[in-house]
Image 1 (tube, rainbow, N blue to C red):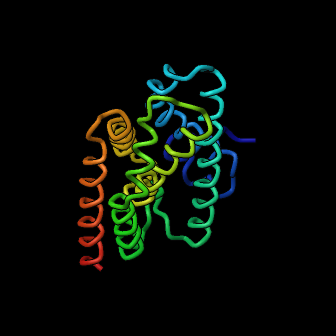
Image 2 (cartoon, rainbow, N blue to C red):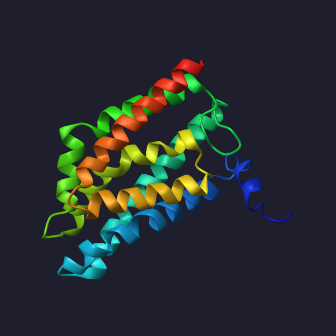
Length: 187
């Protein structure tokens, strides 16, 4: 038995080693989303159950993302950095995400993330609703693009914690629509 793959070599093995992809996605969701939940956890009556529910929600989302990754890899439309290799598909995805960022749903979910009372399940579902689209951009910029991961984590934390986070969501929406349009122009 050979040595386990590491770094970028691991990405080439994820299609045949699902535990790597699932572990990567769950760890990434925890690293990106748990710090932004700290203010809400401080407001929660029961902190440990709050974090357990929040982590479980994002771990489930991570498993779903790993499933999407497997599907895209099986169709050979991901690069080695785990970005969509087809500009048209990436452009359409970005435009869809951008449009969602501008919807009342996104803004309602963000508002719920800023509520003064934080309860595990409702808060977790609201934050999933507010951030799932942004996570979809990982398949455009590249799941293995650590700079993009850091930018997203900071952006999501700012959207959730700042009173003008809804404006950030709108800026992101317009930006993703423009980025998606540019991707489509390249096709």
